[in-house]
Image (cartoon, rainbow, N blue to C red; front, side, top):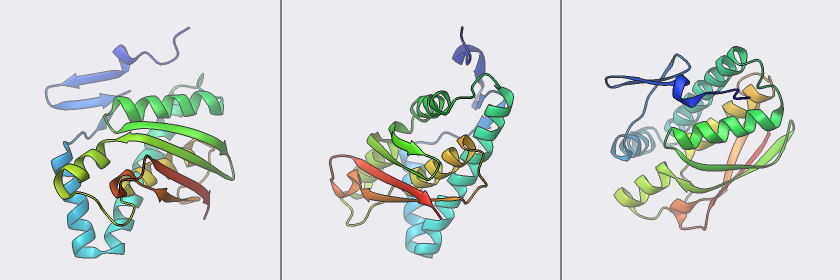
Length: 174
């Protein structure tokens, strides 16, 4: 039985894209990386936090909506599989949820839209830079576990922008 039918749920009307009726924004790496660089350069840590929180709130509300709409997607495993599929189908990259528990998680990402864009435009960083992905992970897991937005904090301990082999994220309660 098909629980989530991509052909039915992913719609395009002209330049507008929606998943299950929710509009989503898709931008090229030029836009995303220039936005990140501008936020980091002008606002510093506050800009990083703005990017993180925006991604957290957007993924949180988006997944809450999807889980309310699709009641048959109820196991943690099914929700994590849907999240990983949406991340990839939205062009964000590949994400593997590892050791996921309500108290925290370890997530690996061997490929990322943001990493590719950053390296193409600015080269290697000295600090982890996947702020959008950190926020996306936090909001997604908060929605999966029916926790309040802001419950988790996500740290990136390895980053392909620093030329590590993959991005590694650790999730813990705030």
